[in-house]
Amino acid sequence: MADIGMPRSLRVLWDMDPPAKRPAQSLTRERIVATAIEIADTEGIAALSMAKLAERLGSATMSLYRHVANKEELLIFMSDAAPGRPPAIDPDADWRPGLETWALALREVYLRHPWILVINPGRPPLDPGQLAWADAGLAALSRTGLNGGQRLSAILAVLNYVRGEAQISAGLAGSAWADEETQQRYGDLMRLLVTRARFPHLAAATEEGAFAMEDEVDGADFSFGLARMLDGIGHFIDTA
Image 1 (cartoon, helix red, strand yellow):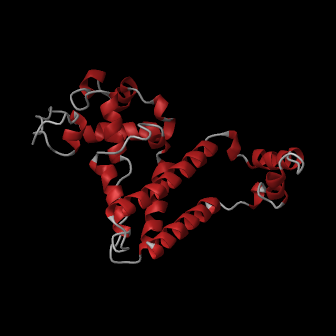
Image 2 (image 1 turned 90 degrees about the vertical axis):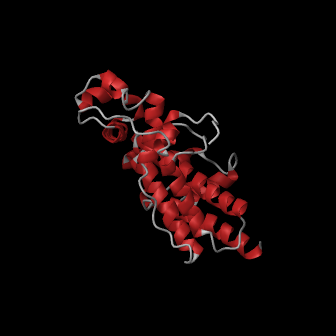
Image 3 (image 1 turned 90 degrees about the horizontal axis):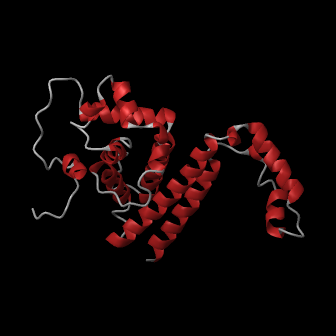
């Protein structure tokens, strides 16, 4: 294979390099990555450092570098491992339940590992873990008659919706907004401050209960938005 400048991290993930001789100790790349994910999940990605990781593992910091070249490479390994296996999608079944299952599972990944949303934002994945999720999403649309580019555009639209909603949900969950009293106070302020004279359409939505947070059902807004997105994809499939 021609040398195309593939980073070491990808060569490792794709098993393209011969395995290095493993030191006679319990420290492994898999254990390092799993522990790093645990720190990021419980304390946030900003709390993750090679020194802290080594301390958690009970090893010297330099020992980590026998398995992981640097923190940037560690983050690539983490983003590959954290999502786990995608849901099994039957390519011969109806596309809509399959794509909905895929979207819901992806949202769970983002809510369980919100740090994924802030590392390497916007960079197209090349690691096998994330590409497996893309493959599963495409499987749902494989019998729709859409061409490859259209199928890819459809799952990217769903992915971007899921990612954006999860980013908002994760941010709210980690803030004072998670408190019901704070949500209620915001709704009360909206009804007080937003007038028809200044913001007629926002005022109308507010008066109709758009900010009645006490009536919200967890995930209801996400489900509504996802359903409308799938409606749009369905219309495109029917008319393409």
